[in-house]
Figure: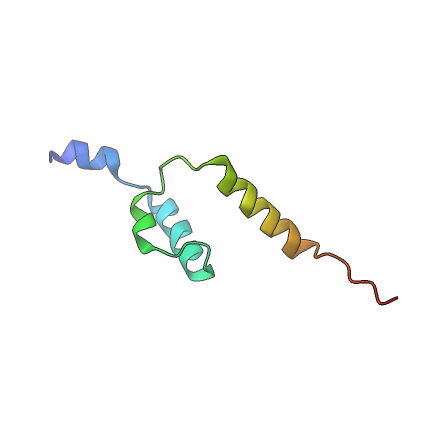
Length: 65
């Protein structure tokens, strides 16, 4: 593959670092995702992440009544 074509498909360094943080945090399970960080994400994935974050920031209250 020509160098200019390889450069076109290269993922930015800041995205790689973000992906590595996601691996360390357990948000990504497969390191092969680091090569696919520019691929589109289905809406359901974004929604799942948002709901997980909401639950961590404001967990459901437990009544002690």
